[in-house]
Amino acid sequence: MFGTLTGRIGVAARGALLVLSYLVMLAAGALGWVAVFAVAGLAAVLGEFALSRWSPQSEVLLEKVGLHRSYRQLTRDLAAVLLVAAEVPLSGVELTLLLVLPAAVWVISVFSGALSTMIDRRNPLSALVRNIDLGPLKSAPRPPAWAQAVAGDRMPLLNILLVPAAVAAAVQDDVTPFLVAGAVALGVTAVIGAVIVLTWLRGRGSGQGPLLPAVQRWLDTYRPEVALYFAGPAKDVYQANMWLAPTEALDQRAVVLMRSREAFGELADTRLPVICVPAGVDFMNLELGSVRAALYAANVGANIHMLREPGMKHVFVGHGDSDKQASVNPYSKVYDEVWVAGLAGRERYARAGVGVLDSDIVEIGRPQLAGVHTFGAESVDRPFTVLYAPTWEGWLDDDPYHTSLVLMGERIVKGLLATTPQVRLIYKPHPLTGSRSKEAKAVHDRIVERIRAAGGDTDASSLDGTRHLVVTGRVPALFDCFNQTNLLVSDVSSVVSDFVQSQRPYVVANPGGLPEDEFRREYPTSRAAYLLSRDCGELEKIVAVTRAGDDPMTEARRELKTYLLGPAEANPMDRFQEEIARLCR
Image (tube, rainbow, N blue to C red):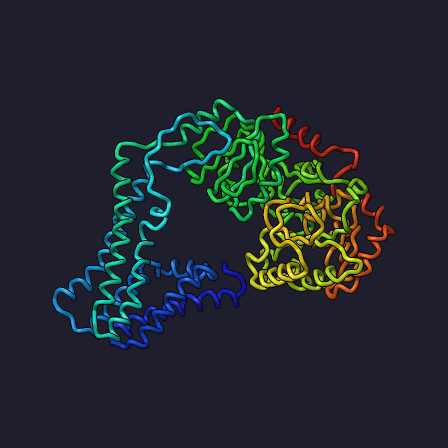
């Protein structure tokens, strides 16, 4: 689950070291070992921060084995109390305060967390909407964001002050530092708790009630015919974003249906009405009888909540055709139809033999590519521009050749930056780059730093100008980068398929070192590509040939474009509209 065997061992080891620091801290506090307590306490505090920042998988693992953060915080506070009790002579009143101050923080945190939950239930977030008027909805007051963010099991974090205070008290043989730290923590906690209590009291008897009935009333009035359904996480929302513009352009009424609050917040700007219903039970209770065509951009488990609707056609549109295994996922056979760009997609499923019937495949082109300039249509008033757009590391642990980034990325960028005459480099990695592989993340960071050192803009939101660019945000979009590009360098991915629309030259990396004939046979999208071996020795010559305009692959790209994306004379948006209209009839 957490990657390779080495990665899983590392995750477990980091969690075990954190737990060990707490155990040592507890034993040192009970035995009065001040120096050991100080070292273990520092390790525990820094370890918690490090895990939350750099190893969230370790936190998840600790949760799964029952070592919740609250238990670790309680262990920390108990160790601090034991150290003071063991090392400092205490009067009866001091002993009482020693015990009561940390405990009071915990009591307030428990009750404030309960009240915060009750406040949330007055304004149930059963649904989120955008571009939809649900009419007047009365909502109960909420506490300030800063108070709500720490209410509950985060409040005992304030007791972290007790760790250095306990060491100071033990060294000085005086309980005062501990009592002062405990009073400060209690005071801050009491303020937050008071804000939560007052908010709860102000909101008694108020609240907007269930939101879903209002959403259902809107659906009954609007009666959408097409639904773009996306149940993936926020990091994958680019998959839905690419279908927003084509869906907006349809003649039929359309709606975007989502299942993740985080993904809802990351969805690109759109004129389409958007509804997010996170809970499966709530979503399945919606009446969607007017919808005739449901479009799916990703294969995820929660698709089942929409697939169970019998009165509509379920269509997998995906998020880009490529020669990668993910483009022929066996899950695809659950849909009524699978829409691909061109003949290449149809043949890809036939070769894969995953159970998708040829009669269920429809070739519609790529409606997203309407804005991509074809060869010769772009402005020439800019430097020769190379776009390096590697794919991410992928899901397979044993595939080091999924992306060129790790094995070739730095050589590619170094070679392009050193080209004479100078070229303009745009580096746009896949949105998921570095999400699974620390090595890929490290290479990415070094590439960004290299481009920055070469005078590039590493926080680009615009393609204007002549500087090298690093594009990692949602804007500018990939297709906008295409229109600035004279030469693409990429991997076996849908980026290549889409770039063929421009008919400009492109390079596909071959990090695995496959023979050229075998590579082009295995990956049909590379038939009109220049191939780049791991040492990148061909890069300088490729740039020179394509820059000079003496490009021997031009005719091959024209033929490949028809194979990948459909006939050149066909308007893919018209084709998309025709197929949607067919389903809606």
